[in-house]
Image (cartoon, rainbow, N blue to C red; front, side, top):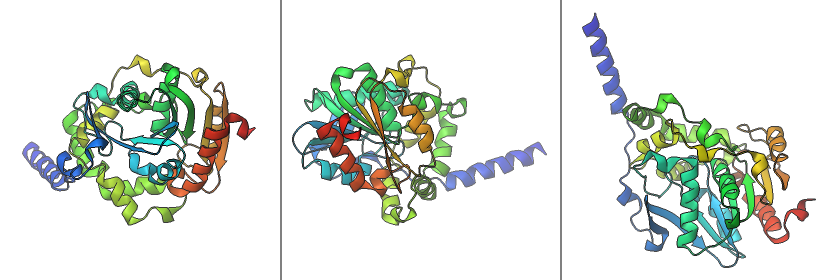
Length: 309
């Protein structure tokens, strides 16, 4: 009986392995990219798009996304500002670091600062979406001298980078199998996008392919492990009340991941914030209502918080 169970378990494992998503070699992924978009930093190569002139606006994407999510917003803002969009550790066209510590919330903030330093940006307006909002808030708390203003778009809370970690992700081999047989499947990426968007029509096959292409990359299981396995990082601890930087919180009214009423209450705990709703949008306004998002960003960047009184 034990032998039969072992054989069945082995067959199940082989079936899982057979269904593994093929990962794109990193060198193949970045082939043809301009050299200036790949900054050699301590953890490897970091993908950065840098457009326009004027005050610097730095765009920080959410979990599972990349600088690609900002493509429309970036192009519009670059008419009046210097716009920098980067891919965080574990995402997009940035090389996946080997160290688990590279994927902590504080390390992601340090990566943002390293990009700013390399590009000669002393201070920037930070715009963070979802997970990127947590990273941006932490940066505003720990390095306020580097942050002119803060815009949070459907942002996760201060504790999100740490709270999403669990003991279940502690074993890299198990995590690797899960990532390649489930998490990275195209159908799962599409499902997550549809859940994030209130308007299903924006989740086109082409959009899904672009998000998926930037996720199924060599080192993806290691990145997932680094983002979800237990990791003590006391520097990640701060409260919303610690955020003193002038902040506009922009929210899709139909966000089902983080409800707008909960977000409004959270924003009220910051020291200097205004709360603005985009009607008809869900968790990803940059995909669903990019022009409205750009309008709000320009208003804040040009006129400050008083524009929303």
